[in-house]
Image (cartoon, rainbow, N blue to C red; front, side, top):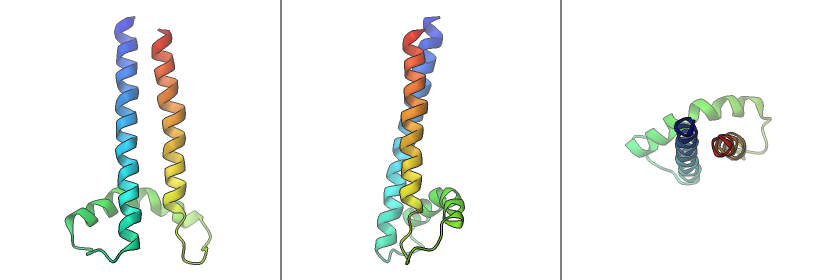
Length: 97
């Protein structure tokens, strides 16, 4: 049974690392939106392609608020929530096994 507990703990840590990296990608996207970054830069293209599929549905549901984009903020809140609920639940489940 300890093997399954270790597997759950490893999965929880992998999810935690992936979500943490995605948070940095979101922060990078926010920073490039503040400056006039070259849209042909590979890093800028990666940041846009990694975040736009998730940000677009959020933007579509939000009302226009004077040119301020709250979609990245809401996405960061969702990532924090997922990290707190799913990762912590998996770690607690692994600890109890």
